[in-house]
Image (cartoon, rainbow, N blue to C red; front, side, top):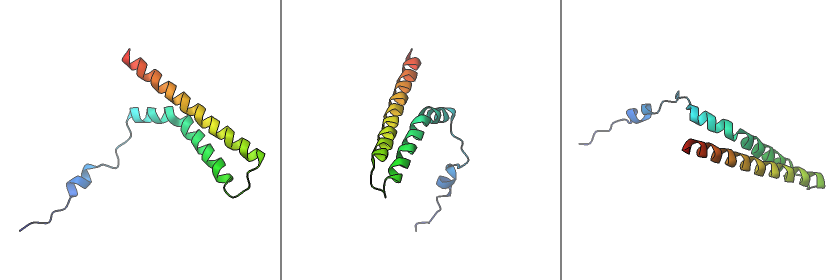
Length: 88
């Protein structure tokens, strides 16, 4: 006869009160400019969804996309510099 048991230990093993580590918080801080740039791009895209695209709208979209690219490059360069510093 097979007994039905709960998976209580597996559920309790994950503690929802666990705080992020310092390394995880540092990674979030490093990526914050990228997150904000992506949010701005998304805001512009949402604003342009239900309107005909004007020259101003195209400019806003292009500027937001360029800001995302610049932030991605900055984060990538900063990450590679951190890794190079750790290796030294």
